[in-house]
Each structure stands twice: as C-alpha cells, then as structure tokens.
Amino acid sequence: MNLNLSIKVEVQVSKKEEIQIIIHHWIRIFNIQLGWINDFDKFVVNYASTIFIFDTFRSSSKLINTFTGHIDNIWSIDYSTFDDCQLICSGSEDNTVRVWDIDNNKQIQSFNGHSNNVYCVKFSSYHYHNNHQNIICSSSRDKTISFWNFKHNKQLQIFNGHTKSVYNIDFSKFNGGRYLCSGSDDKTIRLWDVETSKSLHVFDGHEHSVFCVDISPLQSIYDNNKINIIGVIGGNGYTICSGSNDNTIRIWDIETTKQLNIFRGHNGFVHSVKYGSNQLLNTILSGSGDESVRLWDIRSCQQIQIFNGHKMYVWCVEYSPFVINNNIINSNVICSGSSDNTIRFWDIRSNKNELYIIKGNQKEDNIIYCLKFIELKKKDNTYDLNLCYGSRKGLIRIWG
Image (cartoon, rainbow, N blue to C red; front, side):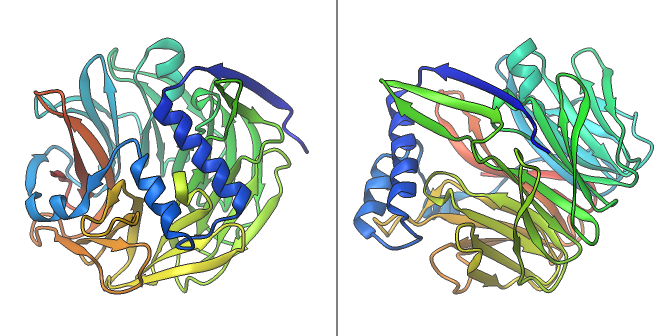
C-alpha cells in the first residue's frame, strides 16, 4: 500500500541554511562515515549555524529554575515560543497536561481531560504555521491522542484508534508538521493526518509494546539559488524509527509502509530513539533498560558505539549542539537521563567514560524521565543553551 500524498514547497533560506544543506548532500554523495575525514569535520564546525562550547556549559552551568505543580512522574516535556513568550509544556502521571511561562516563572494552563497517565506532549508545528495557534498534542494511557488550545482552554480534537496506552508521538518535519506518528502498548505504530484527523496507516511488526517513535529529518535539494523543501509522503525516503519492549529498533518506510531495517543489540526495552541531523544524518541514538546508550549507523545497520556508565534504566536520550572546546575537530555531545537519577554527557567519538554528570536531587528528583535542550533568549537578545528535564516527583528543572 502506497500513501499517495505529495506536496512540494519552495522557500528562500539564509546562506547558513544553504551551506548546511550542501554539507548534508556532500556527506551522502561521498558516503562519509563518522570520524573519517578530520579536515571535513573542521569545515563543518566552521559553518555550523550555532556553536555552543561544552566546556563552558560544564564549568558554569547550574540549576537556574524549578517549576512546581505536577504531583507525580513527569514523562514528557517540550519547548516552543509564541508571541515572544517562551513556553514549556509537560505531561505527567497525574493525568494532566500543563503549560509554563519560562520568562515569568509560572504555570499558565492545566488540562485535566485525560483519564489516565499522560506519556507524551508536543507543541504542534502544523497548527502554529497554518493557523498561528499554539496547540499542544498529548498521548495517554487512556488510549487517546488529544489536541489542546491552551489560549482558549479547550480541547480541539481526539484521535482514537489505538487499543492500549499511547506512549509516544512525533510530528513530521516535512509538510509543516501535518503528519503525526504514535507508538502504543498495542504493539503498533500509527500514522495520522492532522489536517483531516484520519489514521493513514498502521505499522505492525513489533512483538511487544512500542515505547518510542521518531520521524526522520527534513530532506532538501539545493537548486537554482533556492532551497526546494520536499514535503512528501510519496517517494523521498522519509522514515519512522521505533523502539520497543521487544528490545529492537525498527525503521519503517512511510511511502511503502514496509519495514526496512531491524537493529538488534540492546538487552532490554528500548525507551528512547532519536534520528541524528546535519553531519549525523545517518545515525540513530537509543537508550534502553539494559542501562546503555547506543549509536547506530542506518546505512550499515551496525552499532557504532555503546556508552556504558548508567547504573539503571536509560529513559531518554538527546543529541546536543555542543562541541568540545579543546578540540578543533567537530565533536558532538549526546545526553542521557536515567533511573539512577543522573544526566550524563558523552562524546560520540569515544566510548570512554562520560564527559560530565548532572546529579538530580535525591529527595526531590529520584529518576530523570525526560530531557530537552532549549535555547533561551536573554534580555540582551542573545541566547543561552539550557537543559530542561522532568523527574519522578513532579518537578521540572532548567540548568544553564
């Protein structure tokens, strides 16, 4: 079954964005693998749009803010800006979705419509770009996916279809976020059309619960001094990545709806998967109940690195924009959160000990379930990279 949907959007972008896209395609053309060409890595660093030095963060970062209000585990957080406001949304085991104003350090909305745990929350890029609305999408143990307009304090729509808990959701990077995928305890992944509220396809193949999903990054073509953003379901290689309690990571072709690859190696449930971008476009990052963080090469279906150090389950992983200060070569940093109440930073070029550890408050945090890097705007109109995380006891904290 092919999903015959195709949209092509032509936009003008900045010179830096053009350079990034050229770099992406050079990497594909020359089949450059991680760590092969140092001079190329230096070139990438020189043209990176935003560089945050990891050593600066490590030496100066501290806890700068804590949001209180949730009374149980925080499973998910997301970040967005709207009308010059910097916002965080959160989903919790207390069955609520909440919205926080970072600048004013306060909660501005709470939704109590779910009848059970809220496992994932995401700001909807589709509603923002098409209707200038800041809408939050949430998935729950109550088997539903809901959309909330926090400005008008109302529920917009509900997606029904999954027969068990919906653990994770992700919006497409193409077509302005029109498509949404979801992973469920019913062992399936569903693809939804946000505009029509219809379920487009059910991906079936995992043997146990699907804990996490991610849609591949935007693909672009540089042509005639313009960037053609190919927004499609229909033949341009967009895929969904999923992690499961069957200990596997799987990749699914959105156009053909077929399973492409299976990554085996984890010895426990896979609770977090992330596609890489930029020079890491062909990689996947994963975190597992086997206490490890792993990096995978999509093209070869091989494991590139394994990062051991956590003492308990790894619940969340993220790529970061950090580079290593004392190394001219581009050295990307990844990050992971765990039941051992730590956030650990790793250099992807090395499987040695972690670069840095943030320890959660033992009495107040206990477990790190989710984390997200956010660029917060300061009063002088500059930006700082901050790390936001949610914990077992209902606290949201920001380090920076």
